[in-house]
Image 1 (tube, helix red, strand yellow):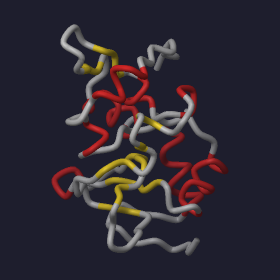
Image 2 (cartoon, helix red, strand yellow; image 1 turned 120 degrees about the vertical axis):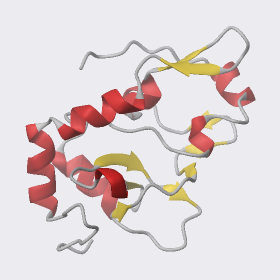
Image 3 (cartoon, one colour; image 1 turned 45 degrees about the horizontal axis):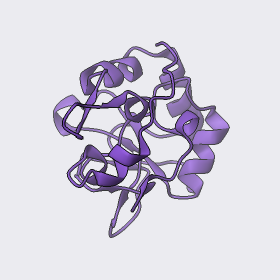
Image 4 (cartoon, helix red, strand yellow; image 1 turned 90 degrees about the horizontal axis):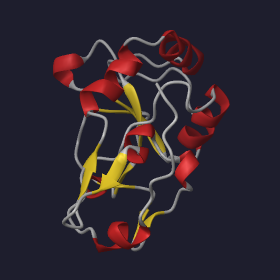
Length: 150
């Protein structure tokens, strides 16, 4: 996984009304955050591990959806607005944003496109040894059970 240059275009971001941030938050890549940073995001209820029923052998870390009736550490792919999305765009500094979000670049018609696919970023989690260590450390399994309460 390569480091992405800051390609942020706040003008484009503030005009976007139909972006993926409104429906599915981007995904952090393994190694982008320390275990302690992940624990803190979960403790603050700002991130969840996502699992799809059809692919329940692994999970990946995304910002929390809002509004969400009840916060869960593991969620099952329900659409929703990213907790970090504000009226003028993302509230996170570029370097702290999920890798998938960093990969979004402005397109010629003031929309945006991603230079990395969702399948690629989720594949990083699926194939990462760090992923296993994170789940072991947090005592979470992909059936949605949490054995450590925050």
